[in-house]
Length: 68
Image 1 (cartoon, rainbow, N blue to C red):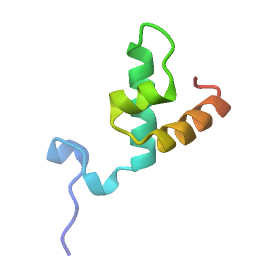
Image 2 (tube, one colour):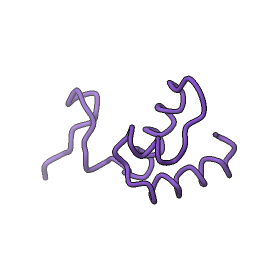
Image 3 (cartoon, rainbow, N blue to C red):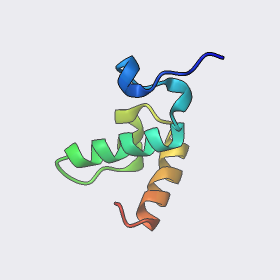
Image 4 (cartoon, rainbow, N blue to C red):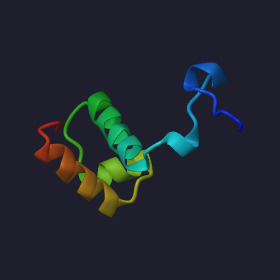
């Protein structure tokens, strides 16, 4: 049976192990952290390439968690 390598062994992340919703939420947080002022959901969608409807859901979730 073939064993899957760990991130440390392969030198990078395995896309099969990535949780896309988490990755998108983290992308939003990175953009917000680098922003000079407030950004709208439209701004976030344009800067990340994430659809605006998805940005709206993610920002609502981040806000309810007290992260934005």
